[in-house]
Length: 115
Image (tube, rainbow, N blue to C red):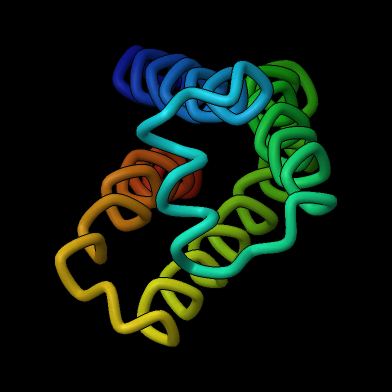
């Protein structure tokens, strides 16, 4: 297991974990766009839970690789769904945000496969 893989995985997990915390804390910069995109309020806790589970799964994947792969796939699908949601809302200026969360997850998975 390479040092780069470990560092990128932990940073990606922390970044996604922060995103989950932001949903749970109802941070203005998160909930205002969700409302703008017309994401039902009842979904918000589930979205935060999915992100938190993905972040924990990435860390667990350092010890049990299959869990990390599944968590990474789940997070990539999650953020791909976020991209679709932003596009459907025609909030094109917000498009970079889900991609910024997806990028380190993809990088961690690529490093994991390369190791």
